[in-house]
Every structure is written in C-alpha cells, then in structure tokens.
Length: 155
Image 1 (cartoon, rainbow, N blue to C red):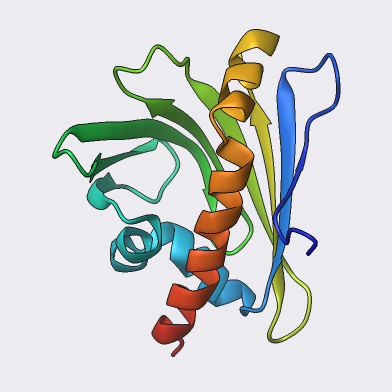
Image 2 (tube, rainbow, N blue to C red):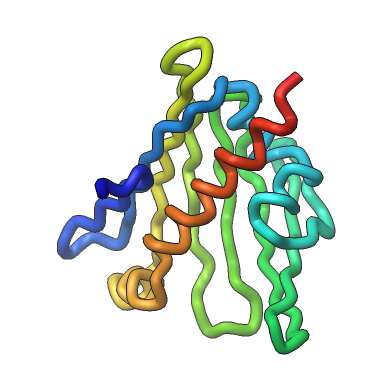
C-alpha cells in the first residue's frame, strides 16, 4: 500500500520535503496544527504553550510508557492563518539539534487539503539521524491519527 505521507530526502541535502493530502477541509487541517485540544489528541502530547502568532513560541510534553517526560519546543517565526507556519522544532535533552520547519497549507477542494513541510537541518548527519530513528514512519502514523481525530472537530 502506498504511503499517504511522502518524505523526500534528496541525497547530499540537509533538508526533507514532506507532503500529505488530507480528506479534511483546509480550515480543519490548519486547526489541527493550531488548536491545543486537537493537537493534544492527534499527537498524544500535552500542550504547555502554543502562541499562534509571529514571534510566538510553543512547548509540548509527552510521557513515555515508563513515565519519563520528554519535551519539545520552538519559536514561531511566521504565522499566516490557513496558509503558513514557520517555526523551529527541538526535542529537548536528546542531542538532536534544532530544525527549521516551513509548513504550507493548501486548499485542494472544499473537502480536501494539502500540507507541505520543508524541514532544514544543521547538518547532513542530523538529517540522517532523524531518518534513522523512524521519523518518516512516525510522521505518517501521526498524520493518519490527525485525519481521524480532526474530523470530530468539524464545525
């Protein structure tokens, strides 16, 4: 079966291009990235802070099966409702560096939309580490959950 979330990792580049078409209206896809209640449900994380604005910041926390807490955080550099989010992403206390993410949201039809993520890493090695730990598979699974969860929040 073909994966819905596609991760393109061009050889010799410090970037990934992630694309996914969703059976969700654009407004609902964007809300799934910006409303704490929806984010918590599809990501399985606690939203500690989510300032959806230019120069805002965000902080999430998740707990693994052994009870260990893991933090994720970043800064929001640009925020255009239903169009674009530019942010940094850092997994705290892991040794992984900060990455820069450009999220672009596109309306395809009244009931479908597309997400394009352009992710930049400091080095080729950091990008390779993310791919090695299963980031592509994990992102696909998360997007599947997003699509199932978000529909419950349709207005």
